[in-house]
Length: 540
Ligand code: NOJ
Image 1 (cartoon, rainbow, N blue to C red):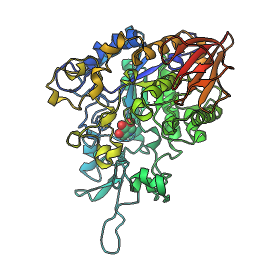
Image 2 (image 1 turned 30 degrees about the horizontal axis):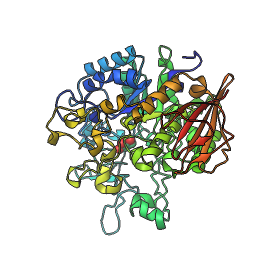
Image 3 (image 1 turned 60 degrees about the vertical axis):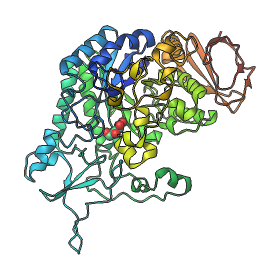
Image 4 (image 1 turned 30 degrees about the vertical axis):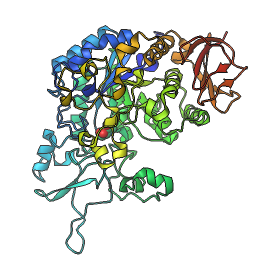
């Protein structure tokens, strides 16, 4: 690696949803030891640089681990702290970094802090969560303090009969929001970061990082008029009928992340650490604020950019979005694009099988640090989970948005349960995809034109190219509205990437260079793109 570039600036991150990766106890869900067994696949077969683990903390699993009951331990269903230490050690030995999820906006209602907090109004931890009196109307009713809604449906306030106050929960009611305005809570949460940093973890993916500070006066959110197609997409939910200016994104959150960054910088003296922010902010000027500034203090190394998830599959739309984002970034900032994760539909289902290959080339050749969600390297597709097996709380309130579909078991081979687990198939936490017999690691690893082969080639080519790892980005006019063309360039290397977003062949005589890779993984010539083909060329 170039000594001026750190692993998180040039590497590729792979996200593992631990429940669905590899099960060593025949429990029907994955565990940490299962991940240890797959490290050679990740480092040698695939060739990623870092792993982000979705939560493995003790949890009642009301939101599948994003309801944390102890920030400094491992849920017995996933293993032990010793297993985690081994996973970290084994990953480091293979040159792979470990990023863990950190969930600062809310804990589980079973966390001992909340149990104490709810025990009485004068408990020392009462203020560690957001408790408020009802409004009390003239009829003696006790409506909640304001109109805020839970993202998973219903109002964001839960009445506590014993202490006669409401507590805030931006997600399910078993996920009470932590009060970051309380200095003791802040110190305790920062202590949980130190716990993992002292162990040697390489970074954190910060869950809903933009939620942690709310309007101190708890003012009502103003309404937004949701009409036509937008209303259809909102499922008529009250959440979507508000502009979320008071229940999230309060500027007071920035000093917290500056302080967090100082802690990470302090630890980076031994080895570079990273913070990745889950920030659903689509105004790039605002998103960029989450990087902080060298003058006033840095914040996140990598605030996720989710904007491409909203784009229709059109070359111009993607080009405009990437260009706008690149233009908004300070010169020193590292971009980071997202095309899939445990909250979104699978890429091959959203865009189509062939399109998902073009999307892979896009993700792995744009500037910045890409994250690949497990199974995307196989072209896994969404699984329609039958109603009686649905588990995701979001999907229970809005079935179309159910996230079980993208969390199904990793497809390793054609043995029982696609190789995830030795459990009885009825015991699997989620069902296996019907196409698992064709789309699995064993079948794809020896197929020179498989999805997996494409990811391997892309990762290999990227690793070998300075232009792809840290070169400048510039979009170019391709001559066709259906082809997104851009270059990645260093002083001594220029790569051209031409992506055909359409189902029509494209003749582009202006495009010259040596073809290094086609998403079809066969011989091809520059200047000629087949339907749904992406080309990576090296300029002479
Ligand atoms: C974002 C996570 O990605 C999602 O899975 C979770 O449900 C919410 N945050 C709440 O923690």
